[in-house]
Image (cartoon, rainbow, N blue to C red):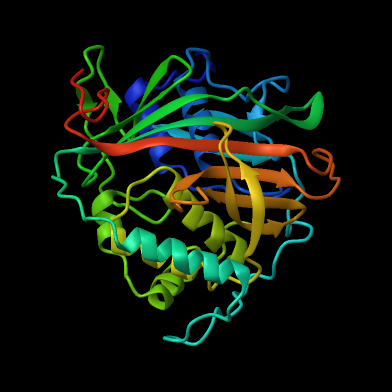
Length: 355
C-alpha cells in the first residue's frame, strides 16, 4: 500500500484555508494577516504533492511556517502549522492584559494622535451612507508590497509593489475573489473555469479578523463599546492586547468598506489605545505623502497614512525603528496604498464597469 499522502481537491484546499486559525505571533515584529493568509492559500493551491514547504521558498513575515498535509482514515485532510521559533511569549511582547483605554463615555486625553483621529472620525462620519444589497460585493483595489524571508536569508526583503484586487461578499453568502500577480484565487469557496461557485461556502460566520459588510454594520458605534468588543474578541491573539487591537482596526481600514458611523467609531476607538502617536510625514505604496497615526511594537512602527487635506485613508506602512535580527532601523517591512473602493454586482468587475 502506498504511503504517499493523497492530494486534496481544490475545494478542500479552499475550505482548509478558510478554517485555518490565525497563528499565534512569535518572532516577528508585527502581524500582516492578509499576506500570510494569501500565501497559505497559494501553497494549498499548488499542484505539488503535499509536503513541508521547501526551506528556500520565501514566506511572508519573519516567523517561518511549514505546512504538512496528513491523510486521515475517512479521507479528510488535517493541516499542521509548525513554527521554527521556540514556544513561549514573544520577546518584548505586551503582557496579555489590556490596559484600560479609559472610562466608558470619557474622551481620551488630548494628544496629537487623539486630536488627529477625532478629526478623521468627524470626516468619516459626514460621508453619505451607501445602499448595498446582500448579493453584491465590496471591491478594493490596492498597490501592496510585503516582506518575505527564507531559511537561507533571515533578513526581511521587501517585495516589489504590485497591484491587488479583492471582491468580498456583502453578506458572506458567496465566495469572494482575490486577483494578484496574475492569479485569481477564490476566497472562502472554489470557482470553476467559468468563474461560477463550485462549493459556495462564502463567509457564513464573519469575525473581526474576517468580516463582511453586514458584520461591520452590526458593530457598536460607541467607541468605548467597540473597543471593548475588539479587546474581548482578540484576547490571547497576537503579540499583545493593545497592539492586536491596533492591527485589527488597521486591517478593517485597509481592505474593507465600513458604514460611515462605524468607520468613525473605529477611529475614535483607536484613539483610546495606549501608545498611539503621530508621524508627520509618511509615504504609501503609491508614493503619496501624508500624515500617519502610528504605534510602535517590538521594534517596528505600524503606520496608517492619511491625506493631509482630505484626511482620507491612503494606506499602511511598517518601518523598523531599531536594528533587529530581521533588518536595520529605517527599513520598510510592508507598504500598501488603497486606490479605490466600491460595490460591484459580481466578482471580477470594477465598480462602474461590466466584466
